[in-house]
Image (cartoon, rainbow, N blue to C red; front, side):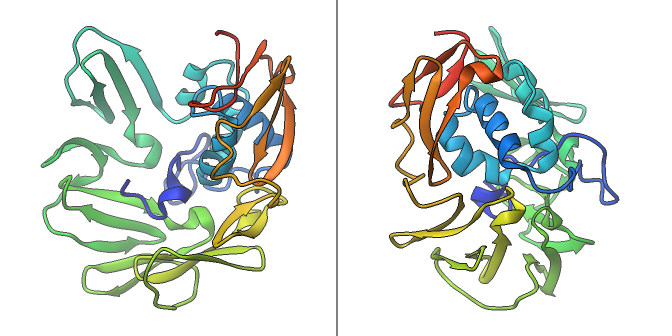
Length: 289
């Protein structure tokens, strides 16, 4: 994963009007509310590894615009469409660029199409094959274009964009071919340890501390310490890292771990007919077995 802050930018794609930087709906009407988050994860959980993982991995990375676009989707095709992404069973498949669309294959029988323009990029064929980016490159580099971090992924041979302002950061240049997203501090660090400063989660990224206010991800979230690990969540009643597959269903009602807080949701409230508890894929709302 070549985006800044791996866990925070897993699904950093938006839906709606572009802002001045060309980034789709970076604001999206303020932080996501608890109600919006629950509806989004009921839908996303049916398509992306269960409801619990949605709260701990997918939701913190999604822009408010992406959440508000996808939370009323009636199926997975609609959910993925909010990110400019779709998958189609095929008999043959070859990786390629189709205009701004990246075509990828899984086993020659499933074709993935990603609209690179959702992230203000296009599709280019680099040294690693087709990829979303802005142009070809060969040497590792990083620079700022306003608050957009422009990096050369040397392995892919493609320059890519990361939008620092999604989390209230700015892009700063530290010297020749060096740039990073910054929260306004300049504290050097090493390793992968995280910590809390009030409601802010601080981690080490690109050799510097980088923090995000958890309340900016979902209204009411704060930073919690569980054992030796810090995370953005709603509580510390359950371990979000261990809770996938521990969901239970009673009729259409699911009991699960929502970002560290024990919670329930009724799948029927979100137009689903069934609740399925699966130890491998996690609990999900669905209309099919």
